[in-house]
Length: 103
Image (cartoon, rainbow, N blue to C red):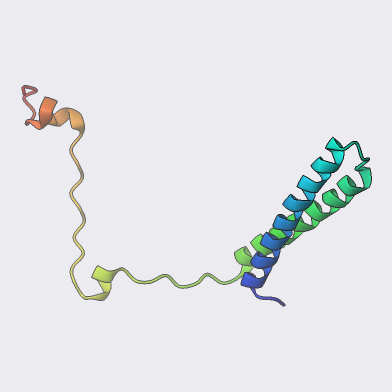
């Protein structure tokens, strides 16, 4: 099974091709050339890209999660002290002076 980076690169490449072909179809339409078969091909390509993207998403969800790095403070043995909650803005009054409400 191809790795996840390969699948992502392939999806991106296919999206680029799809955009180029969409522009070519618009040019053909402006020139008055029928584009029904090209539009069907574009629809099939879009379906294929969507299928690849869905499979990539599902495989990412089903794969085991990578372990997260530990917090620096916790790994160095320092005591982790929770932050004091901030006081509401109204308690500080206007201009940041204490709760008397005067500036």
